[in-house]
Amino acid sequence: MIGIIVTGCSHTSSITEQELTENTRDVNYSVIYYIHADADYLYHNSDGKPIQANSRVLSTALEVGEAARSGEVFIYYQRPERKILGLFPRKSSRFYQYKNGLLINHMKYRHEDKREPFLTTEAQLMTKYRGQNRTDSHQTYFLYFGHEIPLGNNKGYHRSLPGIDVNTFSFATGIQNFLKTDDERFSLVALSTCNNGTPEMAKLLTPFTHTLLASPQNLHLSHIDSDAIQLLETNPDISSLQLGRFLGEFTFQRLDTTVHTTISLALYDLKTVSTYIKSLSAYTAVDKVSERPLLFKDNIDCAKIHPFDPEAYTQGIEIWYKPARFGRQSAQLHSGWGCKPVMKHVGSKK
Image (cartoon, rainbow, N blue to C red; front, side):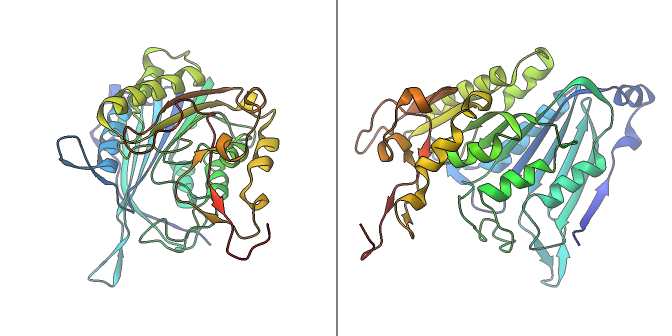
């Protein structure tokens, strides 16, 4: 049995009568932020100043919530779970809910089941608190900020919750629970992580989202700029592809002037990609190289490992890419797909 332990208070007690009336209006969209902070997200900017990437993302998310006059914003700030005096579980993570620009819920929570399926507690919170008033054109957006979601099982992704498996399959399964109905899809899923613009991730998410924004290789810890989400207010008819394009372009322009490492970000129109993604995923699967492959840490362009016809496997993709400014120079072009290089174990069959 999976339980949710929450504490905190609603802010509705301080809302005026006029604001309560505003709060009953239908929402045009829902935005879900999941900000992972149960790991190391410290980096230094160009001036050498230490920055906690997750804290900056949270600040932006709160601003987006306050600006969402016609929408609903859910923010999960998943922090390390601790114990008071080393004995009593402490509620460390934070949940914020904005509706029509008003903060209507702000509470602490923890994961009661330390081995629950990934994102279970967060999805249950949304099911419990989300509003029922939606316009006919309502859209849902999911933004994930964290480290790379690994291909295989990874019980160490959360430092304080090592029993929770985090991988591409558990992620794709977990975000389904945020959708209100079985036939609903996300308009856009944005993965502010490294190495998750992969054929396998796209294949698993295709049934649940129209558009995917992800990095096939490296993405600096300063993360995707989500300020452009506010375009849902100024341009309510914006398509998921247009919104993803703004998110990608703003992020690339900033990183291009501030970092020297590889920059890679891709926007996938999954309606187009769906026509070939199963074939591409099978073609690039690591187990075709070796029964027990050794995976390198970072992705490289899939086309360098598994040469393929660009016309066949790059349709429906927009790519922002710039190689590192130091070390061995790589090609200026990118297929938009990231794959893990592999090498065989000594003694394995050739």
